[in-house]
Length: 144
Image (cartoon, rainbow, N blue to C red; front, top):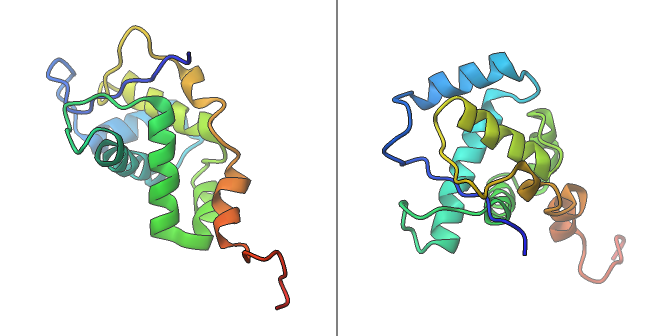
């Protein structure tokens, strides 16, 4: 069984740091990702909480569940442009989402448990498939 990444942005013991401060600190330490990517991942976390935790913001969200939140949120918000927009922000695969999460953990904004691992994000899904397949014609005929 894969260990679940647990995220708890509402954990009481974390440093008192604003999201904006955490993002700026994260970008200074790791400039691969745009600020928009951090905001997107935070919003996708809320999508995952609604989808997998019945909206209970105190529940932890696993890495795989967060990746599903990323997929759902990207497809809903950006449609066929999702892959292009995520790539513009530096997010090209699940491990990038994991790096963003772990950057926010290092900054003190998100919390994690002992069983959490960056590897929880490594084998999620193929971004090219996840963000283009929903927009391909159902019958496979592009000229119909």
